[in-house]
Amino acid sequence: MGARIGVIGTGLVGAAAAYLLSSTPGVSEVVLVDMNAARAASEAADIGHAAAFGPAARVVEGGYGDLAGASVVVITAGASLQPGQTRLDLLKQNLGITDGILAQVVRVAPGAVLLFATNPVDAMPALAVRRHGVAPGRAIGTGCMLDSIRFRDRLAHILDVSPVAVHAYVYGEHGDSQVLCWSNAVVGGLPLLEFAAQRGRAIDAREQQAIAEDVRTAAYRIKAGKGVSNFGIGGCIERLVRAIVGDEKGVFSVSTFMPQLLGVRDTCVSLPHVIGAQGASQPFVPPLSAAETQALAGSAAILRDTIAGGLKTLAAA
Ligand code: NAD
Image (spheres, rainbow, N blue to C red):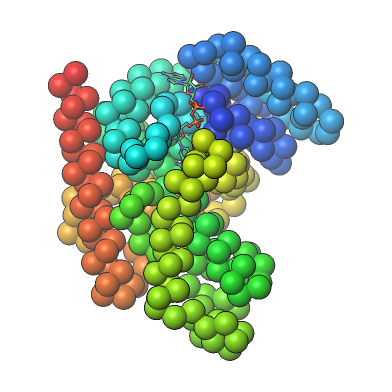
């Protein structure tokens, strides 16, 4: 018997994740929960029909009670970013939605690892820890995992290598203050910029800036063309669930609640974490250049203020 995975919020992100999860090794059941029960039922039927072509998981719609025994509960419910809005603008609305969802989930599935994609994604693990008593390692935001894969994909195209050969990370906020880390980016054991030079495709400072801007604004561009960004984040969710269900102990740049980082208290930003059956390890703080360290501390401070403001608003409501 494989793992039961809950997906709360079966809009475009939840459906993309559920579709991928239906064929994830080790997953035997995907339970879809949405305040729009008809939507959850329709997605369950549609994804279930695709899954029926192979040895895939059972995909069903359900209520919170059906999440009992779930190994992972993925939370993608909530409003999404509108043109001209930042992720932080979404804070108030989506904190309220997620707070209500957490009250139910923690009751029925206390042992589940919680995986958040709802934006602003870095505030959600803090909400789970601070208001619902979830252990920090069991409340994970997808954070900069998506930005990291966008960074790798872009570099892989430039260098004409496979994305899996590129080890490069984005840390900090999943948003405008994110930090692309060039100083520890590696290809084939070589510093990435050295590999690029030897490949005959040097990446100068101006191009580094252009790449950073491209990664930072990828979601805005995707949304301008199709109204939503859902498959990239669906892939991140599936990859993290696979790591948890298989107790892989893979290392990913995701966000968890941190009592202290670089002198900033009570924040939640992406850093490397080991991901396995128990959820996320403590964050690892990589050696960075002075500029990267400063940028990461700045990003952590932005999230600290966002989280404090959001929790205060919620407490007053
Ligand atoms: P969507 O509007 O298509 O779907 C949202 C779903 O949530 C709807 O089906 C809605 O009925 C449901 N919902 C709302 N309130 C609920 C509640 N209280 N209980 C249960 N279900 C509820 O939106 P989407 O495009 O799927 O995006 C979902 C979220 O994912 C947004 O917050 C978006 O910003 C975020 N997102 C995050 C990333 C990332 O990298 N973390 C990437 C893309 C999107």
